[in-house]
Structures are given as C-alpha cells and as structure tokens.
Image: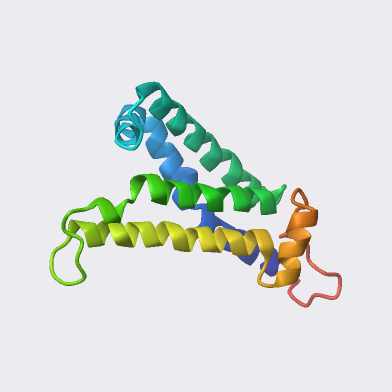
Length: 158
C-alpha cells in the first residue's frame, strides 16, 4: 500500500505543473494565454487552437499518468509537449541580452527553456523506463500501461 502511495505521489509531482496549475491558468486566463500564443504564431485563430489543444493535452495526459491508464504514451506525449513549448515560447536565443554573467533576460528565458527540457526527460523516463529494454518495449507496445500501482504478492510494505 505504501509503495502505491509513493508511486502516486511521484506522479503527482511530475504532472503538478500541468494539472491543476497550468490547465487552470489557461481556463481562468484564456484570453491572456491566447495573446501570449499569438507572439509565437501570427494567426489569432491558430493561437487560440494551440491554447485549446495545450489545455486538452495538459488535462487528459496528466489524468492518464495519474490513473496509470495508457500512461507511458501519455508521458511520451507530454515530453513532446514540453519540448514544443520550450521551442515556441522559451526562445532564449532571440533575446538581445543573453549573457552568462550579470542581469540578463535572455539567461532567465534560457533557464525556463532548460526546465522544460528537464521535465521532458522526466516524462521520457516514465514512458521508456531507465534502460534500453524499456525503449524497445515502448516501441512495440506504446499503449501498454506501466501498472504503476500494482504491488507484488511477496511485498513487505502492507
């Protein structure tokens, strides 16, 4: 029982940025989110669609990870989402003042970019596991759940 609670807690930490916080922010501040998205794509309708899709990804994939239902594929999708959002909205290379020492808005954006990349790595660990066998398993069975809350019969954590 304890191991299942720890597994759930770890998953809550991993998706907590998206569900509830980022998803709720998109719902409560949809207009502002669309304005921000319009900075990456010039078409207002496309920006609105991107925010709507992002909201769906954040809610549905996070819920799948928490439920342990098709969680490996959900983690893979969220990893891709983290990379795409980093590339679209964390473009530190476009900041005119990027430097390693002293005040720099570019460096702040760089750290946000790297946080997205690191979070993607965490999701990929959930999708693939920590070894090459897990990558092969995912490729052959991407819809298979990781069964995160299953406790082996011989467990001593009852």
